[in-house]
Length: 142
Image 1: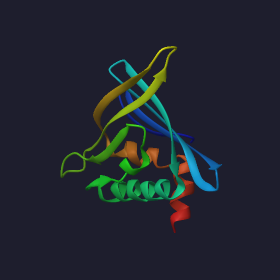
Image 2: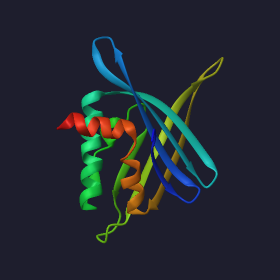
Image 3: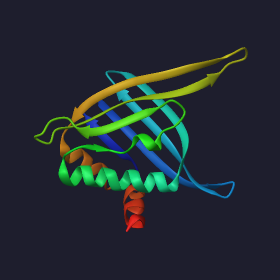
Image 4: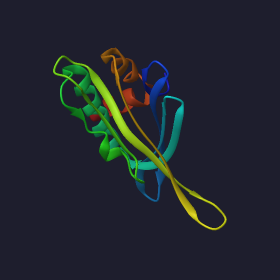
């Protein structure tokens, strides 16, 4: 499984990570994609490997306890934000956020963004955590 993906019907949030070494800093390229009620957004950013590891650990803890919030916000730069959290004390989960990117045209730059949020079954998080890159970074954390 390649992607970390959370689904609720036609709505989804997806995150992919590819390890890249840049200028002597351990960084990863992160691609974010979301679709909600027919609207879609895509953004790319670079993130330090330690932040990826911490986020994977936090997501795994959320899956185990179904309480609190995963620390995914530290992953995101460039104006995008992601929050994955327990929506109710009974273990219902939700994802909300905003995916943003600047588009440069001939004369100016424009910010394009998609705000989204939806609840999903807790088994979706367990399935998403089986993504190859998530498993890789969870194992590195040990």
